[in-house]
Image (cartoon, rainbow, N blue to C red):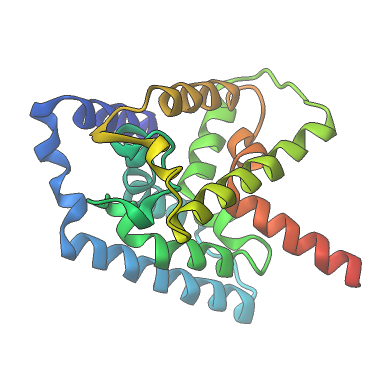
Length: 226
């Protein structure tokens, strides 16, 4: 419920002019520094868990990282300069908090996942949000295994669009909106993913998340070498 209310408040504050001043703290240097500190602390928790083999209060960590990282990760859906969020941050003229943190946060997520998917299973706010959704809905639907290939298609498309920014391709202009507004397509996809996650556990993680897909590719490579 808390995560749902937080998401609703973020969407409302991002959409209405009167609500945007409530989000200014997300760009503040102290808050961004705090998030980087949390990432460093995550590596400390990972080391502690690996060396002591003791139980960690994982539920508390899920809530802490969920509360502070969820607004940063959701904001591009609601206020982005481009039609496709998360991808074109490198060429964005006014980066959102995720655009500022992505060069630190994304590699940190991947490194934390190298051992038993520590970020995905213990800290990721999207994962925690979907776990809460699964507790609400008693119904479960199972999709065919081949549909999991969709995650690799998404990763391929995201990588291709990011490469457009590296080579200065004019195609980047096609994805620009020229304003920091709602991207109807991305919001529609987000709503569909949100609804699906009530009935298909970890729907985002299994079929959309680049972090989870890259981790699965690395795990598959390890299994093939073993």
